[in-house]
Image (cartoon, rainbow, N blue to C red; front, side):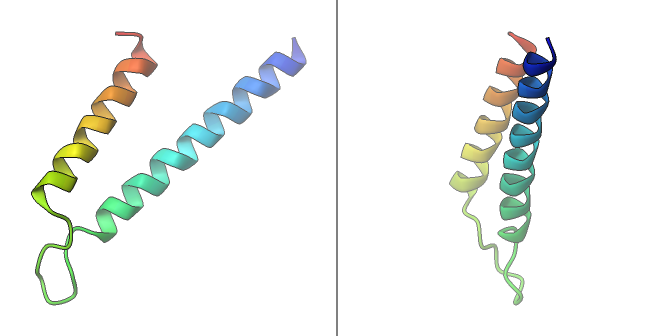
Length: 61
């Protein structure tokens, strides 16, 4: 039981790190220093699809 618990804890931690990294990359790509968007509308759309897919999988829907 302890090994299973540790595995789940590690997996959730890795997932949280991956989501945080992706979110940080997206936030960093929102605008260049001169104010021009660094991420295209398509990049933002795909990222939102990834978030929705991840949330659907986590919630089992």
